[in-house]
Image 1: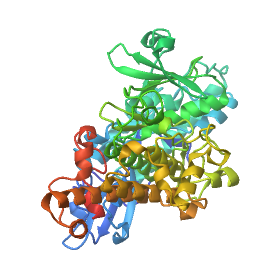
Image 2: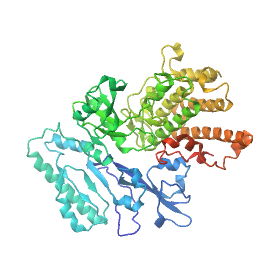
Image 3: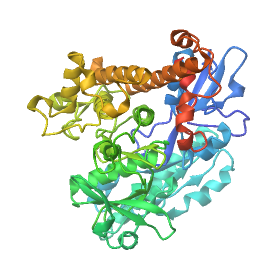
Length: 556
C-alpha cells in the first residue's frame, strides 16, 4: 500500500497483506478501515471524516471498529468500496484525537513470522539478529534509506508508507538481500541456545504497553504466592492478588504446568489481549517470558469478585443484586462479546465465573486462554470441543465445529443464571435438571417460568420487572436453540437487551407523565434527555468509551 504524504489527501486505495511474506503484523496493530463514496452519512463521533474524498451526496470516512457502525444500524452497503489500512495502535484513545493523515503517518510494525523463524533456526540460523528498518518514507527523503538499512538490532521491522512503487521495490529487494546475507552468516555459526531469548511476539508487547515481568518481580508482588492472597482458581491456574512496585493492584494468574498445551494457551491469551481494547474487557498489564520456568499473567485487579460470586457463591446476599443491575451486567457482557466477534475472536469459555465486577458493578470479561481468532471468510473452525460443562454449545460438542454462535449459546446460559440465581450445573438438582439450560427450557415450554425466577427480583409484585424478565428469558431461550443457525448473533442479542431496557425506561417515564405505556413505546422516536443505558453505565464509561452508551436511540 503506497501513500503520498506530499499530497494533502493521502488515501489508501488497496488492501495491504502480509500473505506470502515471512512477516506478521505486530500485536499492537489495528486496521483503520476506509469507506469510500457512501450515500449515507455516518455522523458518528468515533469515525474520521475524509472530506477530500466526499461531496454533497457521497461521504467517505474511516473507522477502527466496524461494529460501531453496526451498533448505529449504519448500512455498510451504502458504500462503494472499503480498504483496510494497518496502523500502530498503542493507544486507540490517543489516535481518535488525531486526523486520519496523522494516524497513517505512524506506519505499522512487522515482525518475523514464527514459522519462518522456526525453519530458520532448524537450518542453523537465528532470528535473534535481524534487520530493523524504521522508515517514514512519506515524510523523509530517499537519501535516509541507506542509513536506515545499515541498522541491525533485535527490534521489530518497522515501516511506514512509501511515496512511490519504485522506492518500495528497492526497499523490498534490500531487505531480502540483508535477510539472505544474515542467514548465510548465521549458518556458519554454532546454533545459539534460544531458551533465554524473547520471541518476536514478546518484543512486540512494549508497543501495546505490555511489560515482560521477571519471575522475581511477581514473587515479590504476591508475597511469594501467599495462599492468603489467592482470589481464584480453576482447572489450569490459581489467581493471586498482588501489588507492583509502582503501587498498582494486580491479579496474577499462575498456570499450573509449563507444557506445550499450557504455553499455547498462555501465548494465545497474551496475543488476543494485546490486540483488543474495550471498556468491558479485562486489561492485561504484562506477563513473564514464555521461557520462564513458570507462566504468569498480570492483569488489572477487579475488586468485586465474579458474577457467580454475587449470584450463588460467597458474596450472594438475597436482594442485593437488583434486576436493573443484572440487566446492566447482561448488556455490558453482550457488548464485550459483540466486540470480540466483530474483531474476529471467539471467547469459547463464556461463563459467570469469567465475568468480573468492579465496585460499581461494571463488567470486565476475562480468561482468554481458550479463545480463538476466527477468520471472516470461513463458516466455522474445526477443533476439539473445549469450555466448561453446562455452557458448551451442544452442536459444537457433537460436530467439532466452533462458531461465534457457540458464544451465543454460553451467553444464553448466563442470562438464565441472572434470572434464576442458580448455577449452570448443580448435581443436587433432579437428573434432567442438572444443567440449567435443560431446566430453563423445560420451564419455558411448560409455561412455569415463575418457578425458575429468583423470588427476590419482584417477578410476582413488579409488573414492569416481570415483563422485562419474560422478554430476557425469551431471548435466552433463542440463544439456547440446538441448531446454531436459529440462534441470534451477539450483535442482535445486544440490540434486543438494549431495546428491552429502553422499553422499561419509556414505561417508567410514561407513568411519571401519566401517559399510557403503549403510547410511550410508540413515541420512542423522540429520545429522552439522557439515555437509560447512559444512566445505568455512566460510572463505568471512562469518559464515554463504552460503545453502547449513546446507542439506545439506534433501537428506537
